[in-house]
Amino acid sequence: MVIRPANGDLRDGGLASNTFFNSFIHYFRFVIPALPNFLSKPHNHLFATPRKGESCDMANINVKKGVIGILTGGGDVPGLNPAIRAVTFRALREGYEVIGIRRGWGGLVDIVRDENHDNSNNFQRLTEDVVNRAGRTGGTFLHSSRTNPGRVSRNSVPDHLKSEYNAEKNDLTSEILKNLAWLGIEYMIPIGGDDTLSYGVRLYQEGVRVVAIPKTMDNDVPGTDYCIGFSTCITRTIQMTNSLRTSAGSHERFMVLEVFGRYAGFTAMLPTMAGAANRCVIPEHKFNIEQLTELLVHDRKRNPSRYSIVLVSEGAMFEGGEMVFQNASADAFGHKKLGGIGDLVSEELTELSSKFNNGKRIECINQKLGYLVRCGDPDAIDSIVPMAYGNLALDLLLNRIHGRLVVLKNGRYDNMPIDTVTATKKVINVKEHYSIERLRPVYQSFEMKPLFLMTSEVG
Image (cartoon, rainbow, N blue to C red; front, side, top):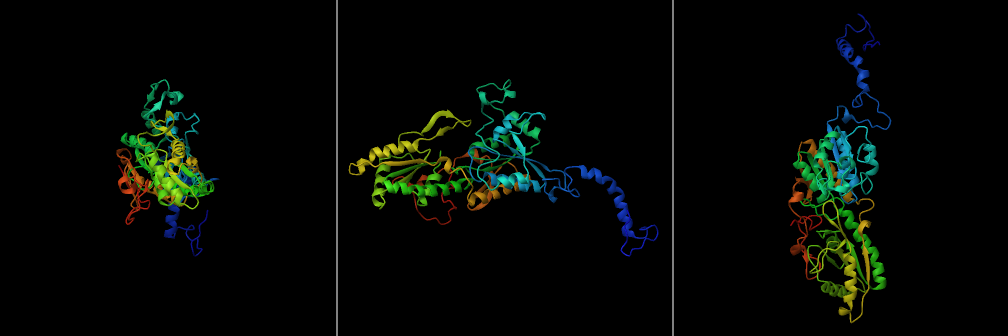
C-alpha cells in the first residue's frame, strides 16, 4: 500500500520526512490488523456495510446500552401501534434494544427459560422495519390480553409451572422477575388501562424500572387528562350516531346507543355535549327510567323528524339497581363483562312511552357500538399523542427516572408517580358537569378548561 504526500514526493523511503504521514502510518499499524475482527462484530457499524434488511444507524456505533421491554394490555384501541413505533424508533437510535412482549403480561407469564424452546409466541425483538409497517394502523401487532400475573387461575398456569403453582389463584410475580432477567430486560414500558398498569405498579414496587403509558377508551386512568384511544372513540361515536339518526328519523323512534364506560361516563358525555345525542346516562349517577322516558318523549316532540337519542354507558345503572353483566364470569382482574343495559333501557322506554305520549307506544332502535369504535385506524390526536407519550417515556428512562406515568395535564405533557394509577379513581364530577334533572352535560363557562373539558376530574 503506497500513500503519496500532496506534492507527490517519495523521498526518504516514501513518507518518512512528512510528520503527518508518519503519524498516519503509526496509527494504522494498530488499526488495520484489527479491522477484520472489528467488522465481524454485529454491533460495530462504524465501518461495516449494513447487512440486507438493516438500516445504517450511526447512533448504534457502540455496544447496546440496555434492553427495553414494551407490551400492550387490556382492550385494543387505535393508537397503540404508533406508541410502540415511537418507543422503538427512539430507543434503537439511542442505542437500546427493544423487545416486544406479546399478549400483554401473558407473554411474560408463558415464557420458558430455555434457549432451545420456541418462545416466538411470547416475545419478539423489534426493528424499525417491523414497527414502521404497523405504526400507521389500529389495534396492536403485539396482541393483548387481560392477564394479571399476580392472580393467575389454576387452569391458566403454564404447563411447565403447574407442579409448583396449583392453587385456585396463583401469584407468578417471582417467575415474571426471573423471565425479565432471562431476557435481559432492564426497563419496562407497559401500555394499558388501570388494570394493566396496576401490575406495572406492582413490578415497580418489586424493583423493576417501569415507565407507564396510559391507554383506554374510557379515558379513566387517574393522573392524566388523556388516554390513548379516547379521541378516536369519541370521533367514531359521533360519526355513527349521526349515521344512525337517519333510520331513527325515518321511523320516528327513540334511539338507544350503548357505549363504553364501566365506571366513568366520558364516552357518553362528550358526544352528547357535541350534539350527537339528546340525553345520556352514566355510571356516576343512577337514573330514573320514567324521568328518562319523559325527557326523550319531550325531545322527540320538539324534533321535526320525530326522533330522540340517548347514549347509555355500559356501566350505567337504574335507580335502585346495579350494573348489568353479560354473564357471571370475571377476568383476571375480577371484572365481569358488562353488556345488556342498552337492551333493558330500550325495553323500558317502549313500555313506558305511552304514559307520556297520549297512550301511544314509541318503538326503539337499539344499537351497541362496542368494537365498532375500537377498530380501524387512529384519528389525528391518537396518532400524535402516542408519538409524544413514547418519546416522553424514553426521555424518562434516558434520565434514569422510573416509576412514572406519562400524562397530558392541562394541555401540557408531563409525568406523574406511577402509583397514582392505583391511589384514586377518575370519574365525572356530577355536581359540576352533569345535570341530574336533565340527564345531560352542563354547559357553563369553558374558559381555562382542558381540551376535553371534564377529563381532569378524580374522585
